[in-house]
Image (cartoon, rainbow, N blue to C red; front, side):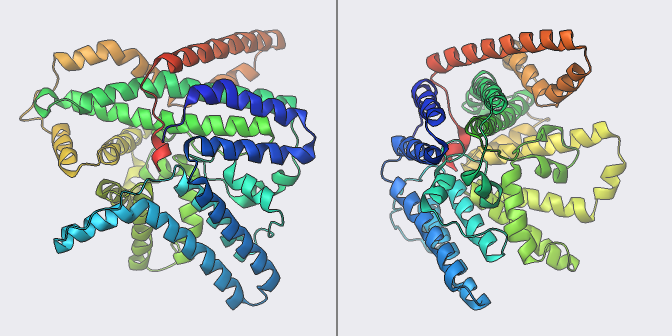
Amino acid sequence: MVFSGIPFLFFFLPLCLILYYAVPFSWKNGILLIFSLVFYAWGEPLYILLMLFSTLLDYTNGRLMERFGTTKCRKTFFLCCSICVNLLILAFFKYADFAVSLVNDIFGTQIAPPGIHLPVGISFYTFQTMSYIIDLYKGEVKAEHSYAAYLTYVSMFPQLVAGPIVRFADIQEQLHHRKITFDGIQTGLLRFMLGLFKKVLIANQVGALWEEIRMLAASDISVATAWLGALCFTLQLYFDFSAYSDMAIGMGHMLGFTYHENFRYPLTAISVTDFWRRWHISLSTWFRDYVYIPLGGNRCKIPRHLFHIAVVWFLTGLWHGASWNFILWGVYYGILLMFEKYIWGKALAKLPKLLQHIYAFLIVVFGFVIFAITDWNALGVYICLLFSFATNSLADTRFLWYLGNYGFVIAVACILACPVYPWLCQKTSSLSKPMRCLVSTVSGMAVILLFVLSTAYMVSDTYNPFLYFRF
């Protein structure tokens, strides 16, 4: 399934916003719900029924828990009903083919994989519905009495297909009472346009180079080219996913909703632990609050704590896809986090900040090679290329050609991956009022220009993937 950015940008979103602003508040959720369902049905006309079933299941169990959950045993029953069915649905659609292939490999059978198409965004909205029923069980939210409001929460198009994972506790009040202000619309529009710029003019461009490098024969890839490809995929994934989060947060502001930040400049982290406080925050906090802490967190003996970390990171890797490379990626980070916690974390903290940044950055870039290549053999070959200092050339003319053609966009990407924008905003706030007005005017014109360029590129460019749609 492919969402077409052009119809959405030029027809769907403006029409939704016009109607949304025109109707009374009591109708706004209805307009938002209709457009959200149309948006999802545009590419997933059949699987919208699956989402409706999942939301109805959790809504019903929530009402039953409120009405009949007078004892912990009854509340646990309704909780288990929701969680088990949700996980079974997710497992069937996301992991059935993988499970059949695994059985064939182990037992030598030849069972045909069912070839089930993965519904877009199922991992995200499943976690959202589960957060509702779990928080209700814990007494952290009240049961939602309006199914339409609950369905609006789950299906809301800004964050439906690729996150961030929005918890019901964070948005329940806003579903019924929210303010739509000019400042909110202005801030949201700016955030949306900046997200589009990051996606089209940065992520797509460095992504195209990564695709070109990964298609080369191993004999044509020098060590420097291999690392350049790994860097490009890291930048592509960061700018692609953070751009979608920016656009989702921006659209949320325009609709009167406030979503939490999903990225805080993760490529500037000083450790693996710090990286996961900054990268895909909504997912890492979901696993922390609903898996890690219920298991016991770190309030236990070391062997048990290591087991908790192993479980969380195995599940984190598996959540990203039904492939061994994702599991390996999760295990990779789980082991590193164990080592940072109990072996070299204190020594790392004493190093100069620059060395800490280099340490974390190299670990992240190498980790995304594992994430990027699903074929086991191809992954092994590429990892060997990264460290083939003795057999392959360190750099070649192809690498220099890539730098000449893509060096500018890579440099811009690296700069923008650092907190340059907040720094500029801080410096601007200290200027005189006339200077602030001038800077604001110039900045506004620059954003509009970037938006026009992004739109032009999006219309003409055939390479326009959203990487996290497949999760």
